[in-house]
Image (cartoon, rainbow, N blue to C red; front, side, top):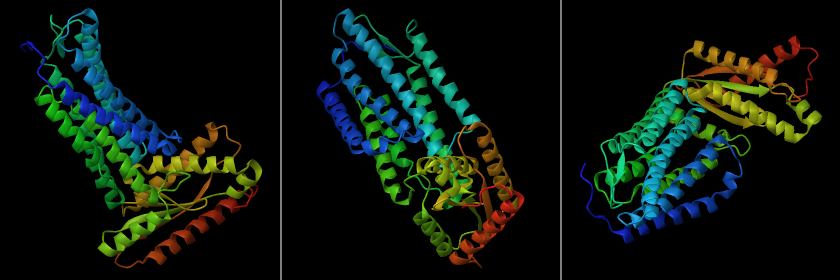
Length: 388
């Protein structure tokens, strides 16, 4: 590609758009400090995306300001600044895919992790080579930045990750049905528009501010979700359960399975170790349940140490498999946790047929079956503290 003979952009517009991004991110961070006190993987991902977007909003106008200016310092700023912008953008895309997988399914599959690693390290290798051979971009003799052919390869990798997050969402929707809701477009649309415009028209500085707008959209969505979230575990709450079941009965959707779970001897954990340890036990159990369920359904904290899982399936074999996996995951946790308690759970499952069941019947039946399992547990473990 031919090098620009002179910068072709309006520096004031570049500065104003990025200033908007800075102000938006500062307001978002200050307004969500209460959320970020909880250093969950999801919140850490959000913070990292905000920090990366913030640095892009600072660096972007800086490199535009010195583009075409003489001197070694300006040359270093143009080269290092543009390199950082590429690094930050691909890193933001990787973190976004990671966040999407966590939010919708509790984890990423091995294939997803492999894809993220290949794309990220492939991009880093390309940028490292660009230091010696101008493959992605070049800073010419007059310190003027110009794009090279592999610029579009890096831009394409960002869109590969964006499409991957959409695939994760669609796959989650297909497996979890209407149990899954998350307005992915709030992030994808601003990033897609900003990236396309800036890629096609040099001088339009929209990537960083569009990333800030995307993060704002996701934070707004998460804020709306809070009404359906349990404050301790982050799982869905009873209000969400009511909403989902009313939706199912109202729309006459196909059947699904429900599982009620109750932690055995939970009162004994609280009495012996204190409520802080009890809360930690609830959080660890919730994490295990969510990891096992993945995007097949949702986990709900029903009341106290009782949980309900809604699985988007009518196959009893899948349900039995998930229940077995939960017991195995708890046993593995007990072996390695080092906690002063052991987690055990009683479970009962019931197939919800919307044509013949009602809300009360569904809850009563899984509750009854769970207590049958609990009686069997205590009968087979006579030395266990029976305090619920």
